[in-house]
Length: 149
Image (cartoon, rainbow, N blue to C red; front, top):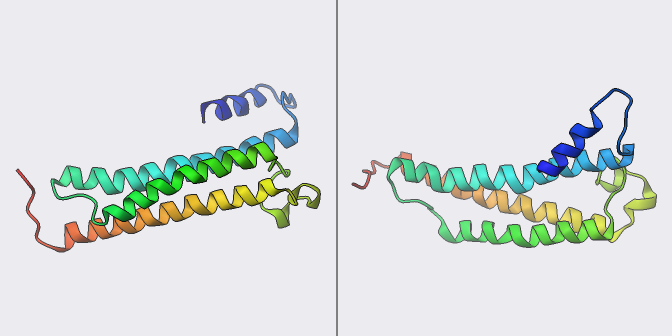
């Protein structure tokens, strides 16, 4: 995240001064958004905050569905592996990674398939964490539970 941010800021040093090419800049912006949303924001805020911090602060039992939470954590690792494989195969297809909106010359790459599968795995992981988060909040606030002392 820091290296993406630094490269983006370097490109904005002066008007009309492009340190990196336009395609590379678009690639940086797209991947920065993907990494920050799917691999940083959703797992930490939904998974960490919702499944651990709220029950910990309320003093109640955590993780209403512990196996679902473990599954959501284990899905992130293959997702990151697929993201790295897509980067090695070359999923840079212009301003977007979505094949119908990009040029057909680069969209036929297997890297695009790996990237899309990576995003789907990360999304499923976030959905599992969200289900666990909602069920934990429901069980905490729907019954008259007493905090542990």
